Amino acid sequence: MPDLDALILPALAELDAAGLRRRLVAHDAALIDVTSNDYLGLSRHPRLIERACAWTKKHGAGSRASRLVTGTSEDLLALEERLARFKGTEAALIFATGFQLNSSVLPALLKLGANPLVFTDRLNHASLHAGLAGVKQIRFRHNDLAHLEELLERHPGTTRWIVTESVFSMDGDVADVAALSALAQRHGAYLYLDEAHATGVLGPQGSGLAQGRATVTMGTLGKALGGAGAYVAGSRLLIDWLINACAGFIYSTAPAPAALGALDAALELVPAMENERARLMQMAAALRGALQARGFDTLASTTQIVPAVLGDTHRALAAAEKLRAARILAVAIRPPTVPAGTARLRFSLSAALTDGQFERLIDAVTRL
Image 1 (spheres, helix red, strand yellow):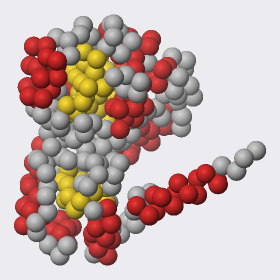
Image 2 (cartoon, one colour):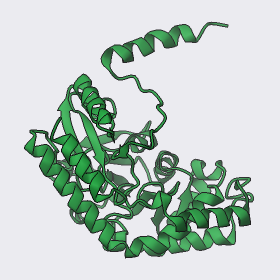
Image 3 (tube, helix red, strand yellow):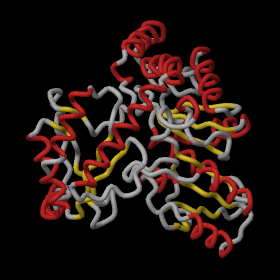
Image 4 (cartoon, helix red, strand yellow):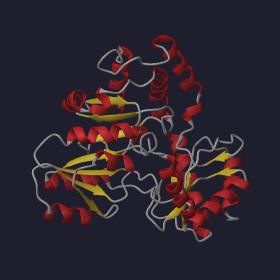
């Protein structure tokens, strides 16, 4: 049998030389975390922890099988109904992870209709591109709806999808969902909206930006909602189709009861967390101001995600190390996660930050 390591070593050496090799590093709890997606600080909220334990005691440590075998309980069905009400849709379906959802829901949708065409934002998340593997993607310039309309006019078809995010995970900017919806309506296209970074943070009561304007909406449960998993929301017929056609749902073990219990508690808390959402945006605006004063490009960020573009990969790594020395955890984001030449620090703020911790962050940023 040939030695696989002999192929791996030079490939890793290339990544090392380019400053692109990734490593798993244990999180130091003493650091001020400005890199996770726990936007509302719910991952450590007592109610989520207590409810996760209660669901585990009631349903067990694991779900034992897929949803279509023994992995569905009355509690889970009721939870999906609550999630649908939160999103303002007829129905919702819960998955174990966001990547699993996007990479399997999109192929299920693209089984419908003849010769589907997909129009995607160039900066869409990797999970969306994974879900569109093998399908012709017509990519429009980031958040450029005039370019999207031009492409829609140039590529007619009976089954056309627009696939994009409402909040972009690396740039922190926001799509014009109302304009996207109107454009989709005008051109007879379906709109698939990824709300991973909007859910819990933006929109009425933190319900996101879709507000009934997308054909299909997905989001995650492990960011602002503090637990783990993902959801897809839309019509009852949509959910019925996915139960029958989505391989990632059909052939995967159901989410763990602990994660579902945490979601149960989060849905009680999130609608009333207006003060936390307002403070989160105030901190983000202050951080953008501090970074811009130091000459950093924060792109078009208007949300809790604040990039500081440095361009060079090694420079971004050095800046992350300098912040770490100041006891600040801010990760350097490098290609291929972001386009070549746009390596950056990605600050991802949380309402759990104390005033003192945020002041330390601003002080450290001014010294970069």
